[in-house]
Image (tube, rainbow, N blue to C red):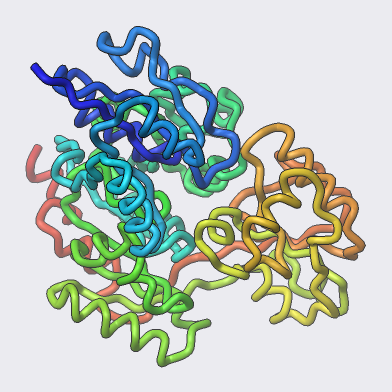
Length: 448
């Protein structure tokens, strides 16, 4: 049998899932390598043999994507699988053009090839772009379902940045569970708000194993998507969040457009801060590609712990990292709150940035007035701390979803900003959930 030599291009998430569900255990394929991008410092590792299976006793090496051309030549790659998200259609085709020019096939594995089927209902929350408001939508849905008496478990899209074997299947039920693993700031941003409302969270690398564990304690699984990837589990109800502040991106980014076209419900978030013509453009695009979807307009309500503390101060704004980096936003809720509540000045963080934080500003020139909460390693967390500490701000406005003081020692006064979803049109999310035959309040009780 002729064996096809495969390289998977990824970013520490979808790439491993595609391997686990499509390639692992299939002798006609040999996955020679992964490449990694988007997230700093995740290359140079192995996908471990205990996860890769008996066909890979040495594991599978992970290289930087910058080495792609050389790998295609030296490793005689037959097929390249593109397996990461929140990139423009043009970006994907530039990568495809490079691969094809070097003689290999370029593959995009579709949802049906990689989705797993659950024994309980699954509600998926995905997005058209990173930073659209997916996490606050997940929190809203879990709170609605929990209020009906259902046992709800959230399964989060992977952030496989640490010890892959150790984090194959992670369960987070209380704050102590967060300390079991060396979590990045990004991971904490996703898990902590759900834990605060009492929702158990699963994440990791092996999503078949995670599904088996989650099904044992859930009446409903809520898939909490990452970037703008589609879900790993077959959804009974597919909810997709679009961002009018980046109107047009919902049909210009991969795989966000896939999500938009698949959605049962499209939530147009941030209508309270977008221009009417931006909201109209998203709505028109949604109706053009998915005329059968329910469209809900929503506000992203900004909540500030002490708004008066901002007035008249020179403030340094710390925002959610991925929203600013591969999400390409130049601001977030923190900057909105600072300006709304009368900050005297917004401190430019760039002159104070050190190490990898300084490199982040070079890599993302869209960032001028806000500091992304980067923290993918202990060293980078320390550099974030140094950057904040050396700034000449009077006050730090912290708009990450976590209590950043738990990770970074901030020596200046702080104000926290958080944001919650509020639907403005009907049907709202509660009505949509109640109408679904597998999600009605009494559906599980009747089945029993």
